[in-house]
Length: 115
Image (cartoon, rainbow, N blue to C red; front, side, top):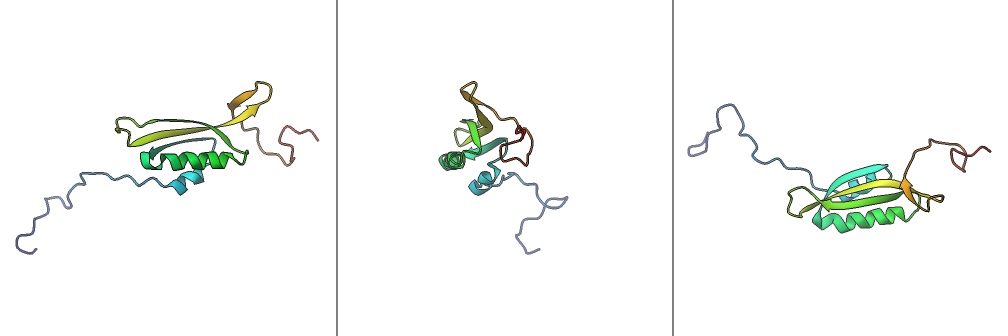
């Protein structure tokens, strides 16, 4: 060890003082779209782009989400919790209702088709 170099504490390497979490990745988030429920923490600077990607994805009309945004706990408005829940439109209720998976079908008219 060169003279004047700090010595390592006994027991090997020093303990990490800060645990770094991976940065938020908008492309990785967009890859989650299509799931029934999604819950992510989004940095303030990425929130508008994340919401834009959700609304663009819903523009296809196949997957529609009800979503909520709230500040992350004790984070001084640096991150927000974005929760998405897939919904379907109920003609009988005239409103959006929680999505219910009815299984897969070979029929182009869906799993309830009797043809």
